[in-house]
Image (cartoon, rainbow, N blue to C red):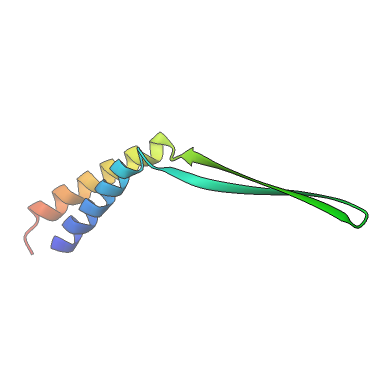
Length: 72
């Protein structure tokens, strides 16, 4: 069950990191008129939803507890 402990630790760390790191997002828009084409690319960062971070942290804590208490 040590594998469950280490996997839970990784999930817990990912949940904590997701609170501080934003996900970059690119959007491309183009307009075409006849033979002329104009394109615009915008980039912005969106934070990870708080509910996702909480689920990752709670799940990681649960796996760490279960993986650390079971003998095997």
